[in-house]
Image (cartoon, rainbow, N blue to C red; front, side, top):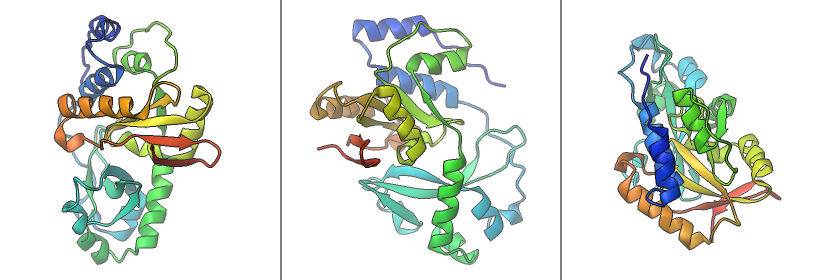
Length: 246
């Protein structure tokens, strides 16, 4: 099992000094967590394209629609603001690690799956995932086993248990309601990467300031294929809706 070493004190000091933002450090820590050897697949090859297997293992992955325009021409997807919910089929591995493939239109048609069946199954399976709402210190503690000083909940990282493609937390009503309670009202959602998003109170800053922070992090800290987007979003507690922030 891979056990990463994270020098927590250095990162926390950089945040205090202003040389890194919380968002940048969150990306670094989560990248370390995601490093692992290629898993050994248990799923039989002949099962991968079967309707029953696909519907039992398909989940949503959220990506940027514009930057994936070509890819979206050959795969089923559902629009979500300026983003796209694509379908990813999880595979069983011997060590329990993450492995999956993106479902394309050809496999979907060959399996005899309708758009309604696919969306219903992906919604059910994604909602059944264990989501996580963590402070930066909580992420560091979960990786290193080291207790971190208590911190104010002004920034919360939203992801899933595996921390792979966990930005789908942005569409999970139950997760967003919990964040609303913890932050005390409406909040902005920053697209940290395709693996996680960050929630901050609307009182934390102006939308243009937050957008600039997202642009800076995307351009310097996030791998191009993992950039979720450059917009920020607002969660409206009264309606439970997520919309691009004006």
